[in-house]
Amino acid sequence: MVLGVASLATCGIVASLIGGVAGMQPEATLPKPAPMRNITWGKLNILQTTDTHGWLAGHLHEPQYSADWGDYISFVHHMQQEADRRGVDLLVIDTGDRIEGNGLYEGTTPKGGFLYDIYRQLEVDLLTTGNHELYLMEAVDNEYNIMVPNFKNNYIASNTNYRMVNGSDLKNDRGELVPMAPRYRKFETKHQKAEIVAFGFIFNFPKANKTNSYVQYVEATIMEPWFQEAMQENPDLFIVTGHIGLAMSEFKDTIYHAIRKHHPRTPIMFLGGHVHQRDARLYDDRAFGIAGGRYFETVGWVSINWPDAPSLRLRDAEKLTFTRRYIDTNLLSFYHHTGLSGEAFETERGKNTTQMITNARKAMDLEKLYGCAPKTYWMERAPYGHEDNVHTLLTNTIVPEIIVNPERADIPHVIFFNSGAIRFDIFKGRFTRDSALIATPFSNVFKYLPDVPYRLAKAVYDILADWETHFPGKKRPYIMFTGISECVQQALQESPVSPETMASLAKRYHGQVPLNGDGEHEGSELTEGYTTSDDFGDDGDDTVHRGFDTYPTPPMMQSRIGIPENEELEVVDVVFIDFLWEVVIEALNKAKYDRIESGLPRLSYNTSGLNEDNIKLYGDGRFDQMLTSWVSKHWPC
Ligand SMILES: [Zn+2]
Image (cartoon, rainbow, N blue to C red; front, side, top):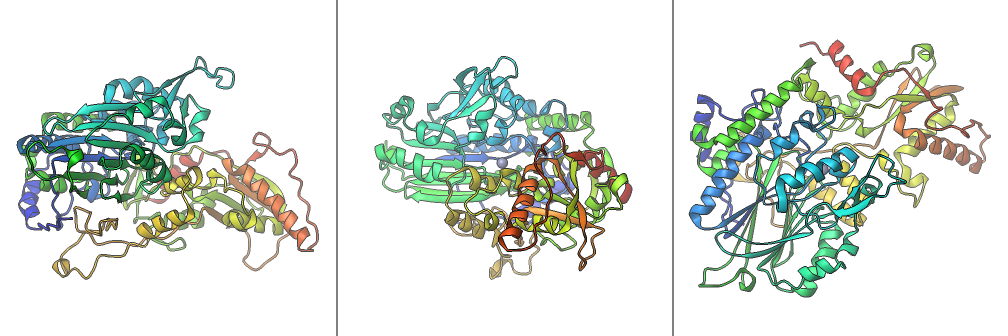
């Protein structure tokens, strides 16, 4: 890895930023200059986005990720020109989860009214499907009817299928299955004439099969005749794009070995995603993988180089060099790597796309103001229990105030909800319709069980919080996960990732410590941001950042109202976010059983016959609406 710190290079650019900002959304904050590491160009280069989740307007509250999709389009244009000038190739790749998570997608009914047109302004060479594209029928339809035609043969679906459903009765209308898009793609690069065979996978995702999509397991896919045919090719390079974490077995075991069986020496480039972490791995000295993070915070950069020799093909080159860079999505980063700034940087198409985003945000009224947060509340950067933690705010203050049933308000109650009720940090300052859609997509209601023996209710939290101990060998229900680490946890649930792998992944990212001991940067004004450590070391981020600590979030939260700390009550109401009804009942039954097992007096609470429909509402508001009305009342600007 070549480390080139060019802190001075940004200074001239800052002047042009201050002189007149081109690009970005009008509400976004200017990025701050910081020491930068350069990118290394190779003969073949790749820019990758993944898990953008609708954040195409950029992060309006976070200056280091404040560039928008229009700015990225300008960036890609200049990088393509630079590649042409050098006579090398540049491919633009996206590995899925383009929707769900931001007002720009969530703000219309049906969702995504503006997003697809904005996204398509970028020319993408290879793209594939993420799990979020497959949760809802309308989203699957949009992939098949909008995204695939928009990107024609560049959209690859090696194991994703579309089901032609007539009507909405999925059970009776199994419909015809067709490939979502072509299974693989063969092409030759523009300058180096490298022959490429490219795939587009998604991890083993059985949940998709309940909608109008069908994901074939990767293990079965590689047995298909078309895959075996592809293995008869003799390309210079295999590119495996996938909505798959680099450490997940679909990549590192199944697909890697399937290719290596036929091609022990052909270079393989894996482009992954899904786990929302910056990552790069070396599978062997000719197989490399990168994943470019999440929420359009990062543009991944990879270069492959091989020696200059007349007519030496990539596949025959003895020595290959891979480099990687995680580019922070802001104008200063884009300016730094292109050497252009201001007007010279902006392209017509980029400018128009920025304007499209502004217009869309206006049409959806995403800047509608509910209030102003007095400070920033973190998901993971402050520990649960700390006043700066968003879940502390939720359990101690907001939930007890908004989840109210006037008829039962005097009865002591405990409210259970999962930490995924909030899915992103809340930043100091303007709390808008966009902030609300980012913070919580859930239009859930709260329900309750009346007069539950307190000793049982008390045990429910412990059981839900520590499911594995109380139900050994029984998989924790997926609904108990979500939030910022949703994808990591989902990977754990739905993919054959070993606990060791997950533990090392967690250590790798959550044990990140502030950068220090680097004499060159001591005392300089580093901005807070990612300090990624991967198979190549800890110099992958393009911006030299001050790191931050992250803390694990418990999966379950509880608010106790009217329950004195050291007092034993007779009965309480058990209140919970509606989709938890089954696990709450399961935990209650377990608590009853545990008492009997321990020889304690039997406590009865009859749960038989209770179901989703006959459990009563507690209060009558939707969580997202109550949250915004709480903000309006308590956070004046
Ligand atoms: Zn994702």
